[in-house]
Amino acid sequence: MKLLHFSGYVQTESSLKLLRAQYGNTDSKQSSRFLEPEEYTIPSLRADYDSCDSFDQVRDVYLPISCAALNVKLGPRSWDDNGRPKVSFVVYALDNLSIMLDECDWMLQRLFQRSRINSEWRNVVVRAWNPPAVRLSIANAADKQTIVCKRTDSGETRRLVFEESKLETLLPSSTKLDACFFLETYDYRGSAGIRLVVHNLIIHP
Image 1 (tube, rainbow, N blue to C red):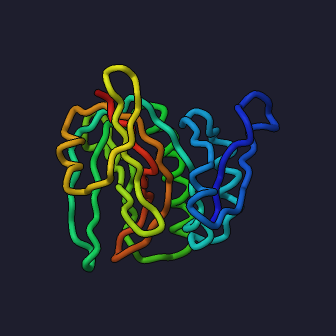
Image 2 (cartoon, rainbow, N blue to C red):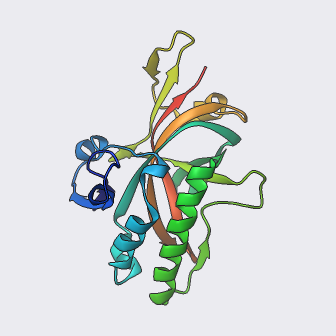
């Protein structure tokens, strides 16, 4: 499993290079620094993905992304996947996030096509909606669970007990939140593309 991140802030040409770091447990993943979309540069992303020879090589590559003040378009939706509950919700994509994800989509789709996989590629940014939107997936597994927090009127942030049954109440349409999430790739049941898996949410009052 690989994590892509910058070392420090973007200031010089040398600092634009993406660094790879190995991690093998949740604690080291949690300690990674989540970057805002504009901190990732297109030349750096292209250079890194172009170094991959197959789609298999990027399935375990994660990009940590941080976005503030996102607005919920569609609240949580649950479905059953072979007995495993899945939950996701839709937020409007800010311009800087759309630009970054479009570039990643383009690069990964090229690599996907070269691998001659028969699955249908699905773009991560949904432009059928105006403004464009993206789907965020909630993690709820033994080794990975989304951290849900609530910011009070006084500015204090409190962690909530994770309960999937209450997410619909916590995240109705028009809710504003901050989110840190990982960009992951998938190829499952005839569909492939980018999945955005939430590491933590901070729900605004």
